[in-house]
Amino acid sequence: MTTTQEPPAPQADAQEYSTHPGAAANRLFGGLSAGAATLILVTLAAVATFLLIEAWPAMTASSAELSDKVHWLGTESNETLLATIGFLVYGTVLISAIALLIATPLSIGIALFISHYAPRRLAQGLGYLIDLLAAIPSVVYGLWGAIVVIPVLQPFYEFLERYLGWIPLFAAADDGSVSGTGRVALSAGIVLAIMIIPIITAVTREVFLQTPTLHEEAALAMGATRWEMIKMAVFPFGRSGMIGATMLGLGRALGETMAVYMILSPGLTFSPYILQAAQHNTIASYIALQFPEANQDGVSALITMGLALFVITLLVNMLARWIVSRRADFDGAN
Image 1 (tube, rainbow, N blue to C red):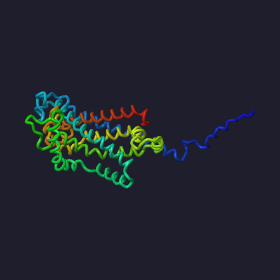
Image 2: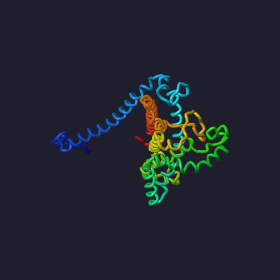
Image 3: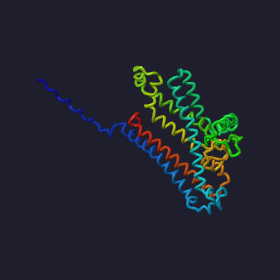
Image 4: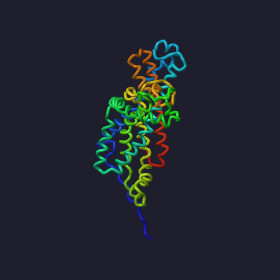
C-alpha cells in the first residue's frame, strides 16, 4: 500500500510584500485609480447640485411671478413653466424615439456587415468611414439637413400623408396639406438618426468582433448557416453591448441642440402629428432659442429645463444598466 505525502508548504518570502520595490508604485496606482473613480461621482454630484441651486428660484416661484419676469411664460395653464417643460419633454422623447427606431436596426446591420460579411479591405474602409462620420460637428449635420435632406424628403412626406394619412402620426393639417417647409419632427428625427448611426455602429461593431471564435466555429460545425451562427453565437454574446451602444446613441439624441435648432419649426403641443410644423420642440433646442434674451429669472427657468433633461438622461442610463444586468446571467455580461 502506497502512501502519499503532502507537498511542503511554500516558504514565506524572505521579504514582506510591503517592502517589495513595486509596492509603493502599486499603492500609488491604486490611489490614482480610486481618485479617478471618485472624480466621476464628484463631477456628477457637482453638476446636479449646480442645477438644483440655480433652478431653485424658478421652481419655487409662482406662475404669476414668473410670467411677470419671463417674457416667454404666461399664466394660462398651457403657458406655465411646468406645462412648458411637459411639452418639451414630450417633444424630446418623441424625436429621440424616431431617431432610435431608424438608427438602431441600420446600425446593427452595418456592424454585422463590417464584422462578418465584408471583405477585409472593404471592412477596414467602412470602419474608417464610420469613425469619420462620428466626428462631424452637429452644426454641419444641421446645415446639411436643412438644405439637402428636407427638400429631398418633402415628396416622401406627401406620399405618407396620401396613403397613410389615416394614421395620426402621418395626418395632415386641418387644411389637408403637409408642411410646405418640411421642418417637422420626422425631419429632425431622421437627421438625428443619421447622426447617431456612426456611434451605435462603431460600438456594436467592436462588440461583435469580440465574439469568441470558438463559439462561431462550433455553430458552423453543427451545420448552422452564417445567419444562424450570428443568431446563436454573436447576438447572445453581444446583447449587452448592443443595448449599451443604443443607449449611447439615445443620450446623444436627447441632448442634441444645433441640428434640431436648425431643422425644426418649433411649437409647444402634445400633438402626435410628426408631419406638421410648429408642433414640437426639444429641451436643448428650446434652451438655445431662449437663452440669448433671457434675464436672470429666465436663465433660472431654462436651467430648470436643463435639470429635467439631466434627470431624463440619468433615468435612461439607469434603465439601460438594469436591462444589461437582467441579461447578465444569459450572455455573460458584467
